[in-house]
Image 1 (cartoon, rainbow, N blue to C red):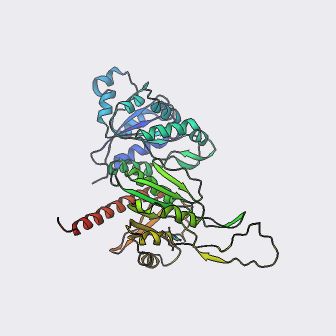
Image 2 (cartoon, helix red, strand yellow):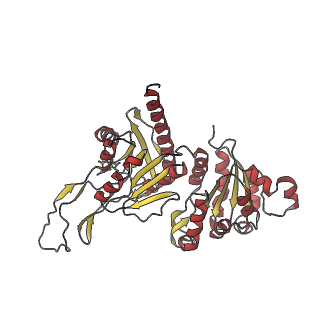
Length: 410
Ligand code: C5P
């Protein structure tokens, strides 16, 4: 059955250049089985015509709060009740501000105030507007009230800037909508994960590190929070924004990451080791910048603690998921890692390919467990993260059900 079958999605469109993507979004939501009704703000109509949305949705498009014809048929309260989900894409800075302030001066903002359906906003704006303290405060207010956010993504913007503020791509928005209905799969679950690289100093200005971008771990943290988990993200040095609803602990070195994780492992039900932890660190950190004195320089390195192996060996032990980023013999290495580190699952990905893995926005992974190897799953890191979180949730619940069944009856 399509994942949005029997779901009624009210798509709100506000004024922003990303509104051109909303036409495609209507089609893909319908492909996923949803019935879609569109509400547009006056500014949205400057970017895309109601006629286009009407043709694509197969439903009348709603524009005005005080429309006698609409009131007779489908007024704002009726629309608010009709929706199983209100998805606003693009959500402009102005729209976020008006909803945060409880203003209801047009059809879409009124609907957001009147509906009991979940609200999912896909922000789209210039990077400076997104980073502005007012917008960040509004984001905080809305998140605290239960509004969910999909994105924004980072990258080149229509205005020529680069940074956070791009509306997510259509497949990611459809996954986010599906995620709202799948939400709750991890309700009450405490999930900790590591993400990004670690940085091991050699002297005050140099370090050993790797090219992990942290994108996969941050996408997993966002997907886990969307699924209702209480998420702690222990992040190495990356400059990604913290996903909504996630508590973040920043660390630099593997030793700091190890300490942050072990201090909290007793209070966690699921652990995902997504960080690319440096295996070695400098045996001694030079107190001053090392000078070029000879043709060669020898550094003595010592092993870092294996964080995920320490988590898996801890009692009580969380459901423990590792990553195997490999350049060759992917599945064999992943299976070895599963056994050697005592993990429940290993997510294997081939980092020799430039189109997926480190730095890329896309990934292809296979889930390896003692029960066997899963099929390859690919897509944007957000889509892969949602699929993985759903898979982990099902396996966690199955493990818990087995453990409960194994307890003697009292
Ligand atoms: O040993 P390797 O680095 O190949 O294993 C990868 C998995 O182990 C990842 O889940 C990574 O987060 C975790 N790891 C760790 N601590 C280390 C090295 C790897 O938690 N020191």
